[in-house]
Length: 231
Image 1 (cartoon, one colour):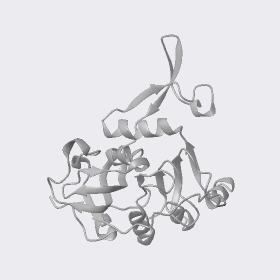
Image 2: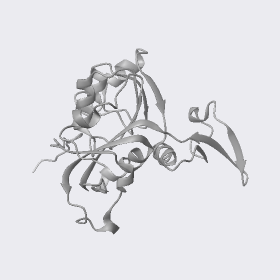
Image 3: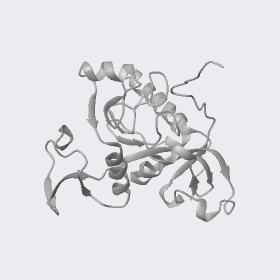
């Protein structure tokens, strides 16, 4: 099975359609699939529901899809760095489903493992629990959260072999593996593609069985919040 493609556009060919659900990896601007996001922007696919920890910033990451009005709904944990997101949400142009970070990661992981739902105490007694089934276990109230299965997962890894076995760097590891797992199709961009057998098996964070298409890209690695102090 051929997994390596020459470009992000080629890797997404035949996968995009209006109204689809996309799971996107990354945390802030760390480990985001920026080449694949740009290719989705260029393809003009619209009415997207995007599941991601955050929504990028105004001119980078998922923020570029918000600028072009291609996103209909965000399922996120944190959206505080994006003024355009705030404007669209407050004006009623954009739907938002807030999730606690751990809940969102587990919803994606559960979807990838074939688990349709799970109960958690996180969010009990808050607006997060509105409309959700509640059950009592050992004297504590829990709410039902549904697993997420996306039409497409777009993720970024540091290094992968030709079959898609992947290694992530530090913070990029938190949401990328569960996002990859929950996609019916997963497209991954990496900084380096290495030959099969060159990765130590115990160091692999995501099995290539979850990855369907793979590209090697150039990455800007922008800093979201640059904080310095006087010398």
